[in-house]
Length: 336
Image 1 (cartoon, rainbow, N blue to C red):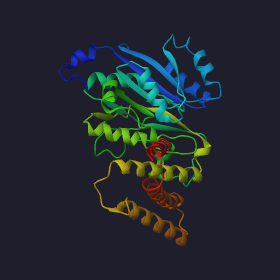
Image 2 (tube, rainbow, N blue to C red):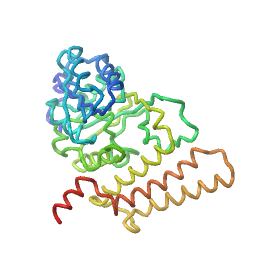
Image 3 (cartoon, rainbow, N blue to C red):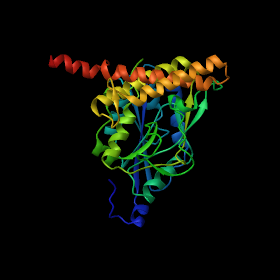
Image 4 (cartoon, helix red, strand yellow):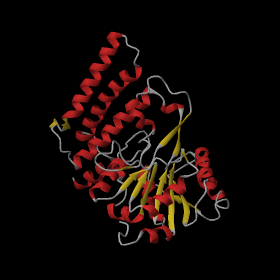
């Protein structure tokens, strides 16, 4: 936690060091764009920046490329190799390799806004906070389809929390997502590393490590702010703008939530091990889909949203009762 005894003037004059961690897997071309944005964005005085690229078993020449960029970064670019596959493994390796007061995290298909560094410095100089996040502005690889549901934009990493600075707390309508986040190293040490059994890996689109981290941050009383000025631009490729991708993502997000629920049960009514509200939302979604089909209404986004609510339920049920992450299954086999 920040030292509450420090006066505002003291914080304003204290230099801060920032490690920007980028996990990457076979995205050398996009990674080049990401690094260019970090290199060209102005770094304000009193902020010392180091960029850490974590290669998660890439086979596309990522190692050679990153090392070729070190001269451009004047020695402030580090390469870390993480053999264990999964975003959480990569994030944990990058965080552990740094020493900065602050740890920023962005993805290898993103670009930071020109004011990103300044926003980071201003936030931690002017406020006693532990973490910040901001909006993800989409950069489309193709024209968005008419069936794109507005209540499932998180599937493609489109996040817009509004134009006001608001607290991350129980009232916030979303979570802190790890593709545009900055945390103090002290709060990360307090809550521990990202949970590796919830990390996306291969065809398993598990997506619960950010939700688990956000829950733990709130549990220890960490203070966070959503900052509309902390902008990143997120490339959305055509292959993610398909109904099949949305279905898979929602199923595996449900699996992730089911795994989490095995460990931390929600304070809601349950039916067959699943929160009852999930059944209700899926039933309403299915009914809406049927109603629109029978009425021949021109609402493809609402119809598809109704279908995705069912995939959320199916994924949760499977994750809660049947799915075992590879690490967990291995430990169970040893125990028996």
